[in-house]
Image 1 (tube, rainbow, N blue to C red):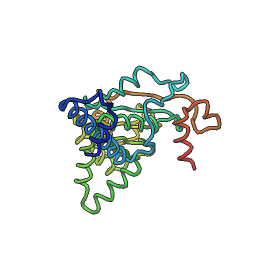
Image 2 (cartoon, rainbow, N blue to C red; image 1 turned 60 degrees about the vertical axis):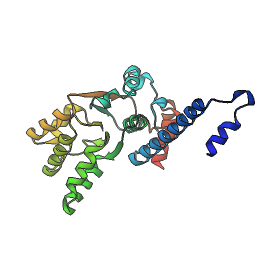
Image 3 (spheres, helix red, strand yellow; image 1 turned 135 degrees about the horizontal axis):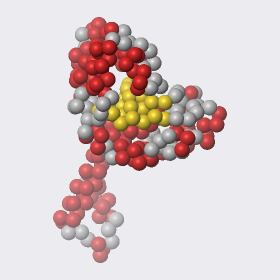
Image 4 (cartoon, helix red, strand yellow; image 1 turned 180 degrees about the horizontal axis):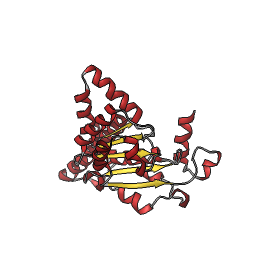
Length: 243
């Protein structure tokens, strides 16, 4: 009711609305408020490392090797609706995690559920879930999220159990949900990193063949000259993680 009174106060005497027009404006306003609330909830639940990263702040400097048309096309979200993946590779400090979070932010804006997790933490959670009997529920939870962001892929070789756990996760998500993977290790080295050839083939078949690949180039953004490479938004987020 307060919203209705507020709307009326903003109208001059000569601007009285018809009942249908007034109801339409109220419904539009209510719909926008609900959308904003859903977006805020999705962003909070995603628990991204850089929750304020967004596509609008991406720096397309030539030294980074980013294709503006590719990034802006991916920002439309068609790849999520098509259940495709994004693979971000590059040396440490080149902005892979920040860009992954920007895509996650955009996905939440497009009303998709998002979840961010670093691979070491994922393996810890899976190991604990196996011990206390929660593993099926954990995999089911991860399988349902519309966009899963897996950060720091390939930092070490996998154990037999980790290989099997990953295969189960990707099998549940294959052609049902989308995933973003960030890695320092080039895709060409993933097969050896996973280890056992048969399982490696099965895992990579589910995440690589329909993936959009982005390789970030250039020097580390964490060096002293980062102000010349990062946008102000990226620079603020990077500094925050180092303090």
